Image 1 (cartoon, one colour):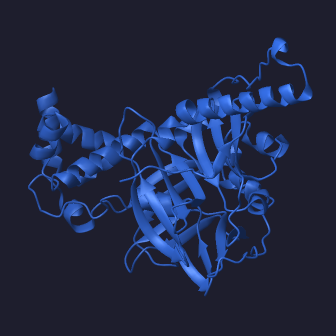
Image 2 (cartoon, helix red, strand yellow):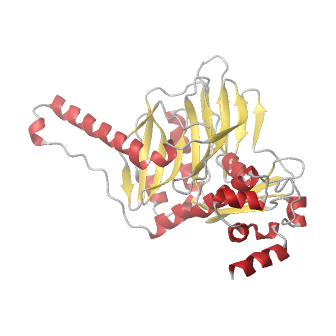
Image 3 (cartoon, helix red, strand yellow):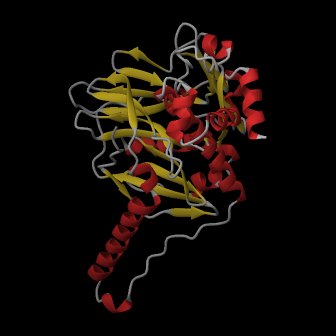
Length: 380
């Protein structure tokens, strides 16, 4: 397990539109030998093959194409065009039995096409997807034969997040900007970073077609406006243009420190479990899962890192409280070989309480009906 390292990306003062706060991420030294671009897909709903029996089905508006060089020389960005129409507001994502193409596939020697964010979402949906490995008496025949198939979650496209479209259209893109942190009512919705400023200018509009969690949707649509960042400079400290420049720099650094240690702490201080997905020359494409700690923020995501660990690409998705509870529940069950008595003891619950929690999480079909009835009777 390790933490996200944003070394090389510097936080700039936020820009606010209603309840949306965008925090720019700027690189002093862009990544030159890896470039990203978008590729349009004609259908909103895609079916992506995971293996011979399982497929990932979701709203997929575009893919990313990564180009890289093997000798450190600058890479040319792949040509791209962006969609002009909005996708559906509610976007389903689920794993089911089927077959199609892969989430990430090499299309040339130095070119990889992958589905942004969906690598991370598929990793969450596939969490302990096989279900019980031991046929304990409490589990249904369906749980033993099919595991968690189909596994489904729901998300919202950026077009449904109040204020996001206007914020992305109006806000200034900084010189050297290679990323952004998106907040809704000061709840971190997503982090997005790319290798090069030219890539970011091209991919900036794709944030509107990305997926956002239920928590973000409600915060943006029902939360109030958030305060803007205001720089306060004492008149007595300014006697020249150089003094004014120094005071402005100090305010900028103060904001960055406050943001990184307070606002983004839930993302940056967590210990994540990383899974390697693909190699891109000297770079690695990986996805990560959080510890599913209900006392803190939980983000899933994907990264591309260089040989020195420097982050070149990042995209994250904030899980809702319900999604965190489901992830925590599945992780505890798997850790105790899906034995209800042992898992319940580890969680400080009775076996009946754990069974009812499994039902409340949407996994009631995994338990035998007579077992569920017995648990309900104990609760009464």
